Image (cartoon, rainbow, N blue to C red):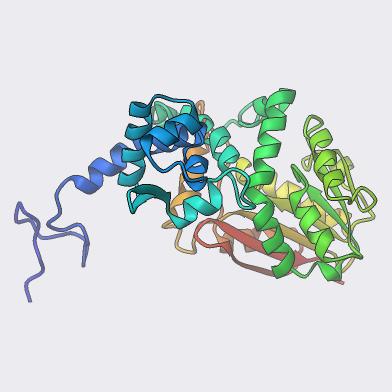
Amino acid sequence: MTPPTSPDRRTPAVPDDPTVGRNTERLNELALAFKQSQALAAAIEFDLFTALSEGAGTPEAAARHCGIDPETADRLLIIAKAMNLVRDVDGQAVNLDDVERYLVRGKPGYFGDYLRFTIPTEYDEMRNFPDNLRNVSSEPLPSKLYEGDLNDPERARQFTTAGYNASIALAHRLAKRFDFSRYRRWLDFAGGSGCYAIAACERHPELRALVKDHPNVVPITREFVAKHGLEERIEAMPGDFLKPEDYSDDCDLISYITPLHWYLRDDVLRTLSYAYDALPPGGGVLIVGYMLNEDRSGPMDPAFYHLQAIRDGHYAGHVPSGPQYIDYLQQVGFVEAEYEWFLANRLGRISASKPA
């Protein structure tokens, strides 16, 4: 059988290429995807989805709720429908299921504040991105990309609060799927709001945790811990996982939950070696992080982070695959290393033990 050909009658170079015969629509959507991002940001900014959830399903009612002009509300509703965020039901605009669960203020899964923080930050970082790929130096950046946020106390509060809202549900998932009952004291580096320690301690009453992060983050961590009534079991203090002196010697589990993609291979290996040295025999290390699939062909979100870690003429980090994480752990002496998808197509869960 003759393989299908494209409209200009060339034989496709890729077998079973799904784009053969298609027009430019897919490429156009990719090129202009930032428009969808900005429209979503606008809808979140004015609490459009909360308005719809509370019954303000017409342009006039949504305008009153959002504090904008009815014509503006109508245009926001039109694009929200076009983006499959909203549908009309009996003449009223209604949120689709994932929007109702995650973008309605006050709902348990709400993470609109995280997107309000993240969208403009990521947008600014990706602006004129091709310029970052010219003449990239192997010398490390003088500071990490996110340090400017954390050095400002107000930005640190916004960043940490947004992280809690975005991650508390994942924290409860981790507490269910990872066996924390094997450990008595856990050191969680770059623990942010403490949400992962909070969820694990709520589920495992014998567990105690120490969360270390940037000095401007720690007061916010303590606030979230107090909100959950766990001050007696979760301690928060400044700490940097690149400093061996910041590793406590009384912890039998050490974790890094989503900071390692900001670092290059040598820093990651050094970090894991510090953990190995600090842990007692039989102690464990836990990584939750962006992870490429085994053939390094994606998934999309980790692949973006991997590319985006080229900034200001430098390689500012990298995203390993699962086998690469295993190799790193084995190089510094860990055994029983394993990985799996924790959040499909985005985050991996990687764990290992120090030999008993």
